[in-house]
Each structure stands twice: as C-alpha cells, then as structure tokens.
Length: 359
Image 1 (spheres, helix red, strand yellow):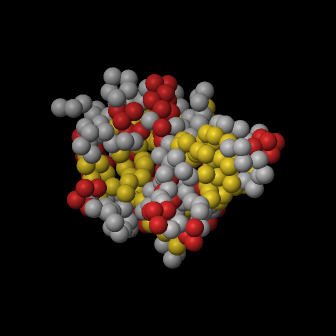
Image 2 (image 1 turned 60 degrees about the horizontal axis):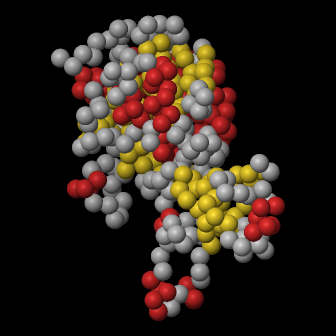
Image 3 (image 1 turned 135 degrees about the horizontal axis):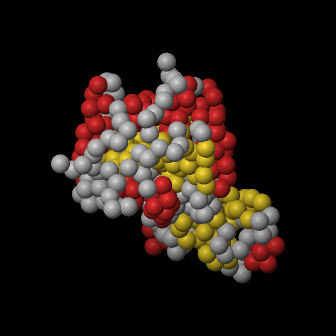
C-alpha cells in the first residue's frame, strides 16, 4: 500500500506551492502545523520560526527527526530610475536560470508580479552574443514606468522575491517543482508522524518532529533549536544530487540515482553507531538505499545537531533530487516513500536510553 495517500498528496501540493523563503518561512510553517497537528501531542515555535511537534512529551530521552522549511529566494537590492530591479541572493539562488522566469515580490501590500527580463537574441551580436547571466546583470521588470511607481507598488529594498512556479507530476513518477529542497524533508517527517499515529505506536522516548528555518544560509535554525531541545539523537533528512543526469561528473559529485532509494552519508559529523543502526534497519526491512561520502561537512543540518550540546549522535538520510536549486527540482515517488519508511523503521529500533557511545 502506498504511503503517498490522496490526502498526503494534497497536502504536499499545497505545501510546495506555499512560498517559504529563508527568513520569511511563516506561511509555509502555518500550513505544515495545520497538517501535523492531529498526529502530535504538542507543538512549539521558537523566536525565529523553527516549528516542532512532540510525540510522547516529557521523557528524559529525546529523539529528533528533522527537515528544513526554507527555500532559496532573492532580495530587492537596487531600483533604477527607469523602474528596473536588481537583486541579491537569499540563499544559493542560481543566476543562470533567472532570465525569463516569472516572480512574486512579497510586499506589505501583497504580492507584486514581475519577470526576470533578458535582451532578445536578435539584439545580441558580436561581443554581445557572449552575454551571459550574472548576478550583476540580471534584473526584474514589474511593468513600472519609473522608480516612483515601483515604490508606490510597495516594493522597496529588502523585499523578498520567489519564483512563480507550482508542483507537477512528471510521467506519474517524479514530483517536480521549486523548493523540494527541502520541503520534501518537512513532508517526509509529517508522514512518519502520521504512520506512528495510525499504527498506534507507543514510543519509549519523546519524539521531536522539527521543521527548521534558515538552513539555506548556514544551518542557523538547526543551530538554535538544537540548543533548545538538547536531543540525545538526531535523524536529519535533506536532499542530495541525482548524478545520473547529463553534465554531472559522478567521480566528482558521487554516484546517486533517483529511484534507487534514499542515500545515507558517511562523514565526520555522522555517528558511526547510529549509521550502523540505520543501515541494519534498511537491510532488515528490505528498504533500498545508496551510499555517499562527505569529506568534511555534510552541508546540512546534520552538522548543526552533531556539534551541539557537547556532541549529539546524528545521521543523514537524503532524498535524491534532480536539478537542485532550480524551479524544476525532481524527486522520484519511490524514493520519497522509502525515505519515510527508513526513518519510521529506524525510530522503532531506537530504545529508551539507547547507548550510542563511540566505543
């Protein structure tokens, strides 16, 4: 039976289509909370917007499962006298894909529509034919006659900008859209909470289902919430690169393929005994998985949890993703289901006071 029920699919579509840019995650967090409330005993919200639900609260032993809620975006940086808008990144936004994209500029007056313009191919001749998008030359057009009209729309320096894009299903196989990185992680942990509730599982510890903010600019939300919760164990889920698409060097990036299962990462921040438990769980439950290695940091919230509070055993379970940090990020449905299964089954194998001492 598929984990991705019609109700879960409906929530996922609404969640992915809700803008949640770094530092401005509130609307996405509200929708996430609305969905997860029936499956948790209590919830909490910290000062910067990280949201978490708790199952079986009050136990001394605390386990975290975590994804991050924020998506990459842009900031209004400069408005020209002619009414064109220059931008800077909010997170790892890719300037190469910006030209011709439709955008939403978030203002106190509401959403203002705009487009990333680009000179027509007919006008790019000679040296101009080599013109390529750069952070310094991409710009947004909101149809204004001048700067004053832009300001009258409610647009000012510091307004956040997201792409106008919605989720779609590709060949009944891939979930496609912007910001699967990492609202897919937030979705997966809600489904773990749902399964625990529906299967009437009584955990011997307190489980914290954490949807962190500000991962895209340095794991900041996870840093803050790790200090608040002080967990004994952290299972983090994020996305990783499907390297079986054109133009990617598998020797440099790793060998991960969509549809072949979640990826588990070997890295200094990943606790070996906890990783062994995850791998054994996958094998015992016949859950397909792949392996990858990070030479230093994982670049995910795993690092923030692992190096908090004197050291917290942490592990990273990743969803293979095509075209990361574009508007057509794509994840295989089977991989989504298997990420959920692997987290769920791992939780069932963690005992109250589980000892993950190094040796």
